[in-house]
Amino acid sequence: MTPVISMEKQEQLTIRDLVADQDLTTGDLKMILDLAGRVKARPGEFSHTLAGKQLAMIFEKPSLRTRVTFEVGMTSMGGFAVYLEHSKPRLGERESIKDVARNLSRWVDGIVARTFSHQAVVELAENASVPVINALTDLLHPCQALGDYFTLHEKFGRLKGLKLAFVGDGNNVCHSLMLTGAKMGVTVRVATPSGFEPKSAIVAEAKALGRETGAKIQLFHDPIEAVTGAQAIYTDVWASMGQEFAAHLRTQVFAPYQVNEDLMNAAGPDAMFLHCLPAHRGLEVTDSVIDSPKSLVYDQAENRLHVQKALLLLLLQSRRV
Ligand code: CP
Ligand code: NVA
Figure 1 (tube, rainbow, N blue to C red):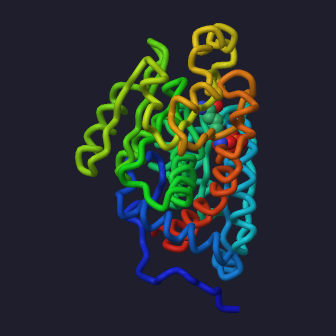
Figure 2: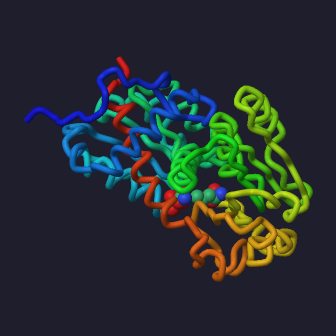
């Protein structure tokens, strides 16, 4: 049966891999979000679009959302995903990353990888002859940012000119929100305790990208200052995967950065709450906020599926030669 391809034939991303948010042009981002909207509205039209395509998914760290959305995304478009548990040994320990990439390229049409080291995904992409997608590293989480900005666009009908306040740790999710936000014209304000700011090189890069779109990237230590006037209040865990040893100390340092009703009230009446999940309820966010009508967290989780289906379509249908 001929696959039903509802995407325009000429649609093609400028990239072959999604390793870092900066790799995507603003045009690429718009193409992915637009296709994700069509996939979400009419999923049945895409049910055979990846027939016969195979995806390998390497995970060094745990996952609920990313694993399920990539696997369900492939299956729902007629493809197949194979899960490779890689917490022990980590990628590169049993054999070189180069050899893993070269082997997988002989069997599958794409590779998704969640690793500790960002360089591991870079190295996979350098050595694979099929597209490689970053499913979170210690540095970045680009698929998360795609789902989050799709969700904000769905809610507010626009992205350009919106203000997003990220409150908490200047981590991988914060980095991706800054970089992708800057490309989409979203002003991103980040409030962290001193010593937990996002990486200065990423801040500089996001600021430079923002100069082209009018987006500002601003750092604060006062969470109230950061959220005032923002439409989106975003937080994430205070200790990311791999930092569990420091969780107790961080709980004390980050306590003033909890997103609770007082902070939401400081933001203004139209402000929505976002979190990539998993959440530690009672720490970075209270039940009263995450369970409130202002919370978009389950829309974000759902939209991971739609944006990643769009990404898979765009990358796997135009397979690298
Ligand atoms: N938000 C996110 O990436 O969730 P998982 O860690 O469950 O994949
Ligand atoms: N910053 C978190 C995100 C989880 C999706 C972590 O890396 O653990």
